[in-house]
Length: 79
Image 1 (cartoon, helix red, strand yellow):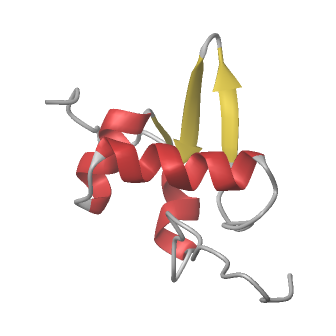
Image 2 (tube, rainbow, N blue to C red):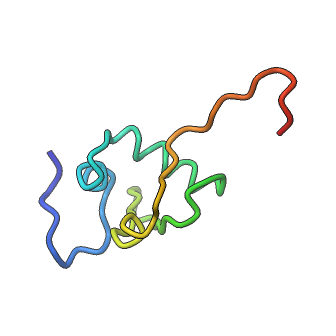
């Protein structure tokens, strides 16, 4: 269980973000990886704090859809 999220807390760690969204930590990690690679989830604000990644709670609230996985490409599909 993640640390309790205070009402004034702006930045969430991955455990807190997963609990806040009601998804697994793995899904949050995948979404942040897509954001770091600048592939998807461009509305998410993330920052590095030491060796941890934090995500802005307001960006989670303002993002209508968060992509956690890209569909695999089939042979012959154009990119």
